[in-house]
Image: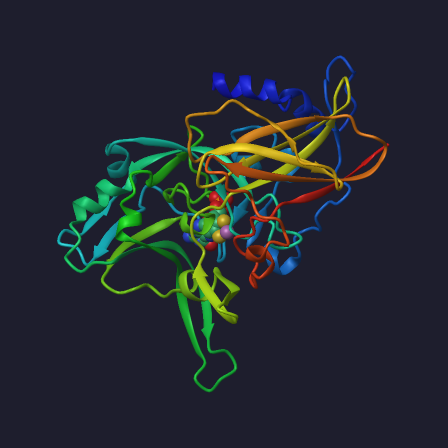
Length: 388
Ligand SMILES: Nc1nc2c(c(=O)[nH]1)N[C@H]1C(S)=C(S)[C@@H](COP(=O)(O)O)O[C@H]1N2
Ligand SMILES: [Mo]
């Protein structure tokens, strides 16, 4: 924890501003070095139909520690949120395997333990007006998935691994037609065997040194570092190896990114299942400091972050200061920029740049502008702030 605390001090985003946010009242100037300036463009509340799916969201400005504690972690679940008795819980590893296995929680804990710090982002983050800051960074621990799959001995011809949750719901196929079909479907996501065998994947039972909470997917969830939230199946119940492609709701019908592309002057529609995380950054908060103002935020993506740039109104891009690099390739990087703000309303945009020089796309970049569904929205985020 020592290096994390030091980073927070460097960012000025530690206990002082946190106390102000949580306490609500005014602390003396000696106690607080920074005062939060609220964003002028607060997102609307989660509307009632979506409240069943998006249970918790912490505003960007309150995601002020590099490690996100469980009570600030966003929560998404599509069906009822199961409460599972860890003592009787079992995980079946079945399908096209030579050696099916059933694991208890203790069986998994007896296997080698692996930790990974990974920033989990919902692929819907920033895709809808109310769905923002659906992201958090945590230290996850569990049993490497690869060893569990190896023990099952996939048969020749096996193609995919499907991760089934304990949660389920009714789905209607071909609604409104004579062949309408209602099925009860468990939450499930699949991966190619190759992707599933990645050394980073864990069958996770711990977050930030504590057992997973029910909201996070207790007793065991998949943590697939580098993938959007949807791949990280919670409340795991069954792992199935298959020789055909899995076509459940969350692979084939929902969480499909639809994009129009121009090919030789012809418009074609591309449809892809939500995949790996994308290069992105967010201005998280503006604070008043002793000498002026500070813009702080985070950047993350599939490759190491080399730089973050910030634009105020229509000004030139300015280089932000990145927090110390951590040895966590899957974790976000904090950044800040000191700003001599003038009074009035300003817009603040950030963009992340990776080591290969790839730049987070602008909102009018065709890759964002031609996207028809709201998932995988990694376009540059612009926020508004009023300086008095
Ligand atoms: N079993 C199950 N796992 C699930 C989901 C779900 O609905 N059921 N939602 C997914 C989605 S869309 C996201 S963004 C993440 C959210 O994880 P969190 O609630 O721990 O933040 O869980 C994923 N895993
Ligand atoms: Mo999600």
